[in-house]
View 1 (cartoon, one colour):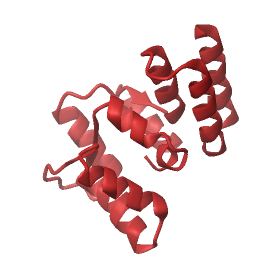
View 2 (view 1 turned 60 degrees about the vertical axis):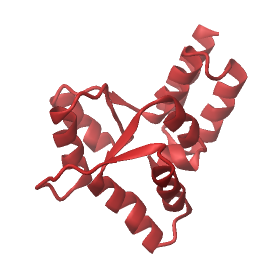
View 3 (view 1 turned 30 degrees about the vertical axis):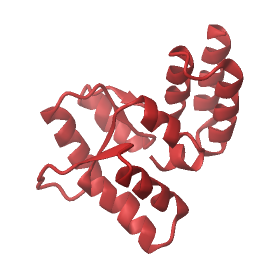
Length: 147
């Protein structure tokens, strides 16, 4: 959530995909971020208030956002979990849960015809500072192959 926000992708992602976060993730990202005056926390909070991001208010015994994500994913029908956390990705793989890393959103938006090749490359370049070189190059190769 933070990387796609900082790179300016969040609004277009939220407009074109259903985005739901658990209440604990909101606490960890938004409430804690606002406490420390992080700009991205205010942006995400605004998107929640404007209905671009839904907060799942399901009661949960779990104290960490990632645990709530797993619990919610397994109790409802979602297509995938969006994350860039390599440790959490390992857990998702073990649980056989589909996941999406930030650069994949750009490729999906391009494939759906929502953004053109030039826009996709620009958005990928904006994201580059926040992702690994491998993730960047894989997305770049895929975009060129689909052009």
